[in-house]
Image (cartoon, rainbow, N blue to C red; front, side, top):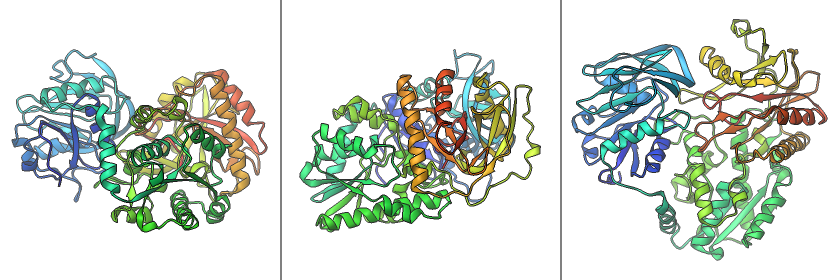
Amino acid sequence: MPHLHKRSIVILDFGGQYAHLIGNRVRRLGFFSEIRDADTEAHLLKEAAGIILSGGPQSVYDTGSPQADTSIFALGIPILGLCYGHQWIAHALGGKVEPGKTKEYGSTYITLEENAGELFQGLPKEFTVWMSHGDEVTKLPSGFFRTVSSPDCAIAAMEHTQKKIFATQFHLEVTHTQHGQEILDRFVKLCNPAPWSIGNYAKHIEEQMKKEVGDRNVFMLVSGGVDSTVAFTLLNKVLGANRVQGLLVDTGLMRKNEVRDVASAFQKLKIENLHIVDAGEEFFKNLEGVCDPEEKRKIIGQTFLDVQQHVSGDLGLDTSDWLLGQGTIYPDTIETGGTKHAEQIKTHHNRIPAIEKLIEQGLILEPLKDLYKDEVRTLGEELGLPHNLVWRHPFPGPGLGVRILCAKEESLLPNENAISVQSDRYTFRVLPIKSVGVQGDGRTYRHALAIFMKKTFSDLRSLHGLATAIPNSYPEINRVVVCTSHSTPVDFSFTPTTITKELVTLLQEANAIVTAEIDEAKLGETIWQFPVVLLPLGAKAGARSIVLRPVESQEAMTANAAQLPVNVLQHITRKLLGLPGIDMVFIDVTNKPPATIEWE
């Protein structure tokens, strides 16, 4: 175990998705942070300035659930528990934790008590926070008092003033919690930690890269997205072009004209050590007949690796002298269950078993693996990359392969009539397919609920709240979409679907339409990412639907569904309906959580 830095803020990781996000937020405040396993022995933490207990996917009262060393309470160090950490403090010190009557996933408002405690002094009486939990504290431990409540959680925060122990059920670290950074800042500053600056992090990465690479060279997989672009540029700067070979694999699953545009961008940067190979036929062959989203991701990841290996042979490279470079960033690892207690949300193509084995053997170089998207962009601009390249919308490594939902048969919700969300303004139907979600730090694979507005495009803003309330109340649902092409429900016609070149071409055209409209409206940087998803269902036999998924985010760990201007949404809908075989259009209005950004 690495030696603890003196006066650092230590995050004990219970397996929550946001553990590294907490560390990132602390560093943004200008103080050093580091992450340790939840069960780190207390005596190893005695030189820390403060301890933060992260969230996690389990229940504190379950056998085998992660536990910290209770001796940390005797260190005399300020402690802050978040979500699972909040519950663990109560559980460990004699309070009570039970399943909540209502699960809370997403935005909710809280109310401060008259004595709101040290962290909340001077803040508004009510404000909005980000929740992601199923359990709640129902009895305070001795010496604690309640500081905050929410409509569905009586003890949403608590404090032990004398011992400087604080805890909140909500996540301070996500951008969607109002005053969250201010509250976190108050806790961190009372700890008096060591200072830290993100400005010197690029130098740290360069030194680490040189140490890991040694005398070897690096074969870098380049997708054209900001992560691999920054990593490839950094490698060229630090090691030199003679020690780096870039490979851009045309999978056949990329956006329209993607390969041409990426090649042109690197030419303008005078980076010429990039080899391009057309492997589309190999990817389509390997994906033939495959429907399961996890299997698709693993096949795509393995095919990337296979292509890299035979290209290495074609180029005459001695693989014993080379490392494989990837533009992996932190969300890729945590969503694949990259921390000790984390649940898997989805397997990223750069975290398939073969890659994990190479990582264990020390044959993978990932210079950006501890960074978030916003930090990668900052680093890219420091490297001199053009603004438009650094700020391109993120695009998944598996490409359109995970934006075409595949299924051999429809998936019906047995108890659809049990969902009661009718209104005089809209009706609903449950889509006969499932998509990936994230609720309570765990992965879900559940249905989407489609809203049909009786007056199309009217008052879409109000439905964003509904998209949080419905998954909180109905566990069978993890996202809500609004139909922009129909005002009344239809009987969906399902078409068995797997990846084909024809469907990829169709989705490429749909994506190009959306991109052009967003650029025309100058929304490219307001919207952080804009997946365009093809569904295997429509209003008529053989037809399909498009789902628009615009989101606002900073680091991909959480996201708000972006609200498009009505005229832009109308233009996009009309043009998409002009594509052959497309007869329905939806817009996804669900935040993350409870839905992921991508549908698979």
